[in-house]
Amino acid sequence: MDGLLFLLVLIGASFFVMTRFARGSQLSRGHEGGCCGRETTQQVDQIDRVCGNEVSDDQGYSKSYNGRVYKFCSRECFDDFEATPEKFIKDNESGEASLVA
Image (cartoon, rainbow, N blue to C red; front, top):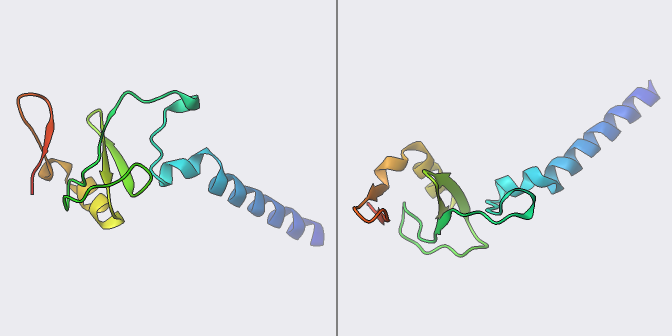
């Protein structure tokens, strides 16, 4: 019984370490790099589409939508955008997205 408990604790600790520090943790932190160190070709929008705040590269959340990466200053703004992205994006003739609020 002690051996089984030890094995379960070891597996649980391994799973925690892998999900916390491995590649999957980059997704939850808004990592924008490409696979295997390759750079992404997506354009990154540094203005939060929901509230209009400027968001730096190392802060906030990001979401890829229609070939473009959008940055958000807070989880609340990210969730609002994710629920209805078309509410916050309007494409004009030049292909650039503009803020709709």
